[in-house]
Image 1 (cartoon, rainbow, N blue to C red):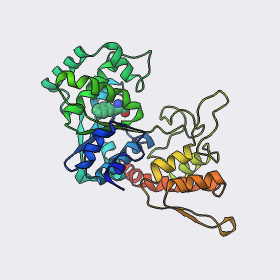
Image 2: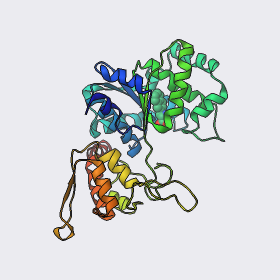
Image 3: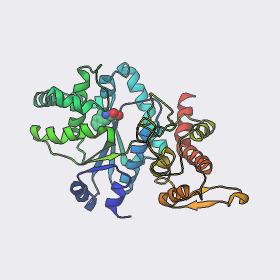
Length: 331
Ligand code: NAL
């Protein structure tokens, strides 16, 4: 795979392709970053961007992970002390998951976001940005009516962080796109450069295939899940034999979350995927490509139940190191 393809594989959106092509031409000494609000236990949403970070490391990038403690505070996630404690746990889980310790820098937001220069820049970007614009940027992260003043400061700081962390590429889930667009619009007004962004897709809810998998609603898969819990969750997943399910009765779009998890979580991390089947059901099948597996599910060659069983065991293998680390930390 060439460098550009590795950098952009499985990305839902590349802003802009030309800017990322320029980085792909010379990825050494380049820095990419993702920010996370500290949380005690990682879930598949965190791991989707982590997979992209691993691709970027393979492409030669240095990685900056912002442990966004001040942002979590602005978003009402607890006392500052509580947030700091969970951040350290989060770092350990990312390393266990496979981020290379030598190529990854973990930065606490609070290590520079209280500096005078930064705070004055926050106020300047507040002066440049309309309330309406900042609110729209935050809409995907913290929904509407109960929005506090902190919720409009949040995206402005996130935009500014791109400059302060001196990164060449911003990475995030598609839910971060409006913040990254705000950054592209507003950073030049502070005489800072515009940086490209990569956005990873949002995985659908596991049991319905609708909307997004969320840690606050529905079933999520986290680093805490045991092999048995994974099996149970995946077994109850929505998995019609198609990549393109019919909309729900009320018209809501649906995806096949089992295929999405194979595409975005399993194939990027395993060179081959083996579906184990007794000989009487056709014997084992080996896939080295997501497309082949999806085609077999559609043709009926691969039964949804076998797809689910295989998915559960690969997810178990993926999260096992982080799960073990969590247990050690808690012991
Ligand atoms: C991501 C988050 C918070 C602060 C950031 C600062 C710089 C870059 C990325 C950042 C978390 C993200 C979320 N907004 O919703 O998870």
